[in-house]
Every structure is written in structure tokens, then in C-alpha cells.
Length: 179
Image (cartoon, rainbow, N blue to C red):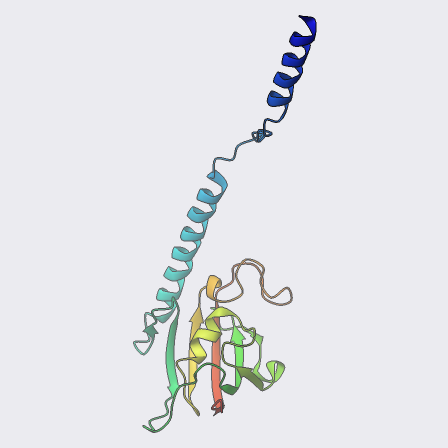
């Protein structure tokens, strides 16, 4: 009888020993409050910067509010109907300067030098990348970017600090269409 009991006990042990392991539960649970607070701070920062920009441009009715979250005005407009805005992969030759909202030059056109940029294939800060898509050859445009469209939280790690809105004056010299 002990032999039968031993064999039954052994098979029972084998069956229950093959049970799959259970996942361990996390020790700490996050509530998501940090993300919610971050969203609140970013919305408040954007509203503050938006109000500063609207106050700045209130005397100049030439500024246009773009759908991309920045403001711009044309200083020189290309009226040639055959002229096109750049598309994906087109090479844009341009110059630009950056200043703060008070008009203090941060980077001059001479410091930035003439740039060649392959549209949407290279790195540029988000606002300038979106702004160049609006421009044609020979145009000169002044853009005002809130910080999240400019260099954001990190700045440029050189002259532009954290969460600084900027004014960018951009001149497109040439647009070479992708073959």
C-alpha cells in the first residue's frame, strides 16, 4: 500500500510542479500625476509665451498666425506665379538670424552662415523646418516661435536657454528641386 501511495504522491507532485510561474506584481505603482502636472506646466508656459507674442505683434497687423503654432510676416514676397514652395527632399539654400523677443541678436546671419538643407531629411528645429515649407525663392520672412517650436526645454546648449521664445529672420536664396 505504501508503494501505491508513494507512486500516486510522486505523480501528483509532478503534475503540480509543472505549473507555469506567476508574474510578480510591481512593488510601486505610479499614478501618472507627474505627467499630468507636466502637461499643466507646459500649457501654462505656452499661454504665457503666446500672450507675450500677441502683445509684441499687436502693433503690426502684417503678422499671420499659422496653423503650426507660430506667427510670421513677409518682409519680401515672391510674386512670381511659377515659383514653388519646397517639397520633400528639395535642397533649400537660406540664411537666418535669431533674436529674443526684445530684439537682442542671439545669432546673426553671419554667425549662422549660409545653410543648405534637404527638406525633411535633415535636422532643424521644428519651427524653422515648418516655416521653410511656406517660403519661396527670394522671400524674406520674420517668424516668431514659442519655445516648444524653437529649442524647447534644453535650449541649444550654447546661447539659447531653457524655454526661450525666439524671432527668426529667414531669407531663402535658392530652392533646388529634387530630381
